[in-house]
Length: 198
Image (tube, rainbow, N blue to C red; front, top):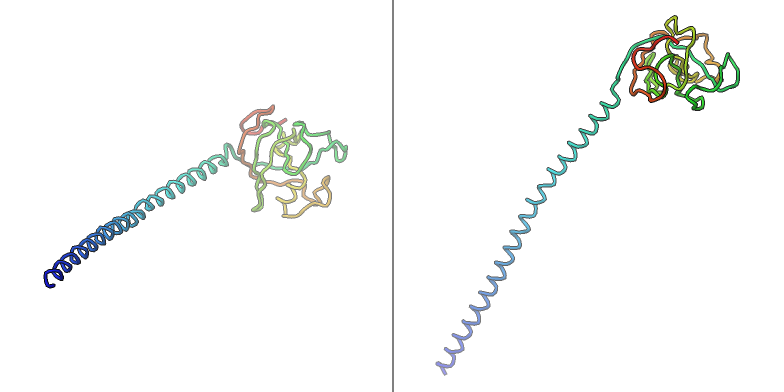
């Protein structure tokens, strides 16, 4: 009886040892998995580098944008206003020379290439438009080197909107000391560089 109990006890111990060993192996596997899981954040830590790279690309893009909007040429002049749409009103000489319809942001230059992108500023206000017509005529020989559309002229003058596109609605017919900046040269007919009289 004792012999048999001892045998059973030894067998039970063997089973227990086997069970414990299996448990340890399982636990070892869990620890290995935990280690892998713990290692995952290290891989995730690469993400900030990717984020930093994206931020650098965005910054480079912003710098390129600034470079694109940087003035190629700048200066100041006296500006007048016009609205030529073929109506014949106020000495209207017909549709703009560029072939584009008269519109807000369309300026006339005596010499710049048609399509030239220009930023004009006065009295703390700015508007970006384009050269779509030729002018002023004889006034360009007296230093009036830009004709602005009626709406741009009035906005730069006092921040208001004219009641009529043909008349700025102000006793002022010129803006002196208007700052201009060429942002991009047009591909149409004309000459790059400082404005020349018509």
